[in-house]
Image (cartoon, rainbow, N blue to C red; front, side, top):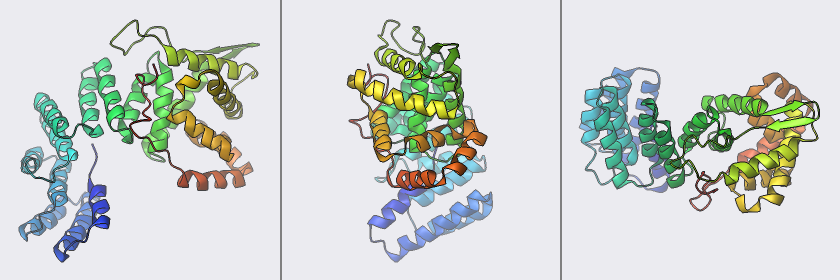
Length: 350
């Protein structure tokens, strides 16, 4: 679930608002701060006064519903949100929060119905695919949870949360290859959040579990022949096999794994994969190419896996401050962008 306040500010930059709209903007910012500080009754009073005075912004009503939701007054949240459904300016987030509120009062069937109604109106709403996936996940139906998360990725490829949820499922499965891909894409879309830090640790642990050395023999195991979360048990694992072969070849010259050797492995993997698996070129491999061309791939790998071994990362950053600062400056100006022609998912790779 997410708040939609950012939409309001984007719109306010693009349009010439009247004094009333400007006042609405000010009220909204004040209410957000109050809610964030758990001053719910003050926020409620602020928002209701503005609405009673004729400020009819969708976002004021939505924030009031969020306030009730945060207070765990789900019935008032539901009533407020239902009054918005027939507005011309309604957005998918209204359906998302409404479904969440129904779920909180034990009406999971009604919640699912609300999410589906929202998708009928907003067919590319990643947040609604996310919630349908979460409902399946809560019931232990991981196959269909993944189905909805991946649908959300395909329909709304810049919405980070579906990558996050898909990554968590796959990183705890025998098909970690999809987890490391979805997880890295998530980190590129949602940088420096608490979820990003968690994924950094999980990606680190996965690479260090799935690449192992026994004397001169390297073992790489990011994918099992058993396809746990597919609707077909015979679907060919084309991308995972290519990924695993390239990773095995990239790791052969190493004898142990740490962040320095993992950086070298991923650098060689990129060359190997581009050379022998060009048909599987994807938005992440293209971004790696940009990082390598700009000379920032080593620093990027320390950023990516840094929370898995913070001490080693801190030592590297201290010894390579110029490289690190240069990478951060480039990174800020060069975010990844994924459109619907560049979606990465299992079904676009096979």
